[in-house]
Image 1: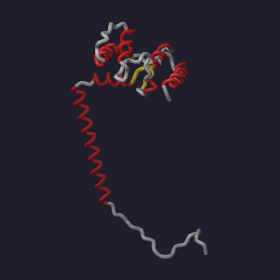
Image 2: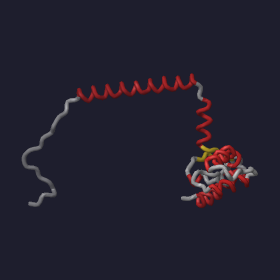
Image 3: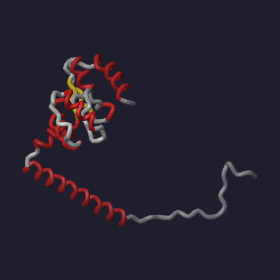
Length: 160
């Protein structure tokens, strides 16, 4: 799948969803096609300058590429829009990206909550260690019987 195929599929799916539906989207590359891609290090300096000027920035052409990219990073949040988000919005749906949900969730974690998480996980790990020890003890107590078959055996498949 690529961005174009996903766009077509998504466009067909949108009418099937309820009004005001919230769509949780992962960050697969075909789900994250940008409406107006922001400059990255692989861009040519002239392309970065054009992008900045198209955004209304006055650019000093003497600046080096890394300085231009720093300026683009400042502007990036204003212009970083996904094609899928716009399509969903036009259909009265909302796309929420997993990354954003994760960041919001992490921001809500307080030091006390984190401490409780660690305590809980430690207790659960201890339970599993106890189960491992008990399993080892039970297996060690088992008497294993070896069944040895000797002598002639016959089968319906043997030829006479």
